[in-house]
Length: 402
Ligand code: NAD
Ligand code: MG
Image (cartoon, rainbow, N blue to C red):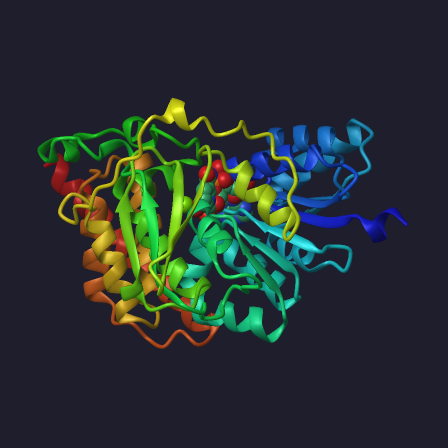
């Protein structure tokens, strides 16, 4: 009877920042949720801790060698958790009958296949993996509609917008009476840095976000504001709205998470402390509300809320994202793949911070967008953009040292 009344949850990307915050919320409500499956890429130690503490039925390592090490360690500890491996394992746990809700919290394009599979299986998809939607927006939303999946945004801005939508609103439908969506952005660690210093910033400086504690890739995206660019594209698909009606406003305190501007002049906003457990708890319990562990907002302590227009010279990635969604087809997939490669090169191979938008712009200039109607077309665009970006990153580093 237990398994009938509890919501069965699969957590894709359990060892990451969103994954650990999700486990924290789930552990506060053992009477409501059953953790069916957790997944990770290569972090065996992290996965072992999760299995010991949260006792999922299944654990998937995308990396096969890591899966073998996890299996050995779990058997030694006498655990009941079964281990699966590889992309097939990810897709399998995203589509199991016992699973009602799938938290999609893998970072980057790697998350697309299981997230799309969850939508095609008609699951409730809690979407943190914005890259999946940016790459395959038309295709993804089509699967959601066709298979009557429920799509709930985890990205704090989109979760805020969703909360400010009319009663009964369903993601993917054009909202009635909405004039604009306003996405707030903190501006990241370099909002006020001198422009001539940006080329020399280090990965450690770039991942030190002033308000949010997140994975490395999204932290760099926040520093370049590509994160906001991806979020503009994400908003167009989630809320079926033209890009010209999605605006970005800098709000350094990260207390207003986004706003919806209605035809009658009403502007609704969602506020809260910058802690991802709020949108996670909202989506897990929707349409009900549950405790998340987030402290009450202290408005007097916050004191003031500031707003500025974003500077597209400082943040060319935001301009490139607007251009990509306007170009349509596979352009957002190309933008996303080039960005993933350039960010990895910045983090691990010494590519200059300011070369990230240069690489992306060059890749977008080289590859013409194609129709994005099939998964094959999207994955082909992703692959060619990665190849072009790797070549440009290698060239960029040679020029930097010579
Ligand atoms: P993270 O780097 O902390 O964690 C990423 C997770 O994905 C890990 O569990 C890792 O094992 C898994 N993973 C990585 N590569 C994989 C691969 N190739 N195959 C299978 N699994 C793989 O990232 P995060 O900060 O938790 O972000 C996760 C997603 O949520 C991203 O798409 C990000 O944009 C989005 N998001 C995060 C935040 C945040 O506050 N961290 C906020 C909004 C949206
Ligand atoms: Mg966000």
